Amino acid sequence: VNASIPPGEILYAVTRGFQPYLLYVHAPVRYVRTVDEIPAHARFFVGRPNLFRHVKASERWGDQPPQLLARTKSYRGQETLLFARDVP
Image (cartoon, rainbow, N blue to C red; front, side, top):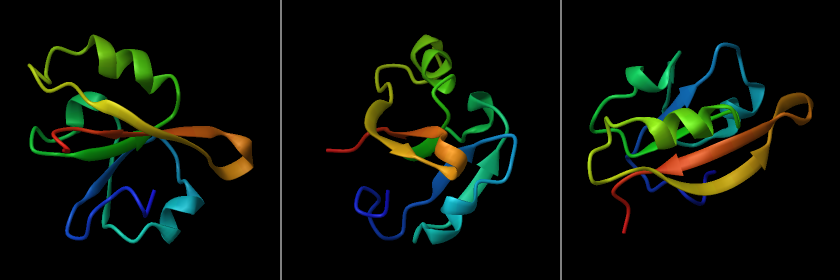
């Protein structure tokens, strides 16, 4: 995660619970409960695999849909997906 997020960017975490591994992320982390709470200007966000279908189905992204950058293991073996928008 740290290697994928440039300095100065915010990482939005779509989660309903505390994820201890996010303490080790260098970027500032802002927690939201749903995809709809992610600000329009957000470029990076993480969430659990069930988030993938919501991200792909959402029309809020317009012509710049998020791209899946990485899959990571998180606390207690739960997988996390890292998404990016408008990244060259």
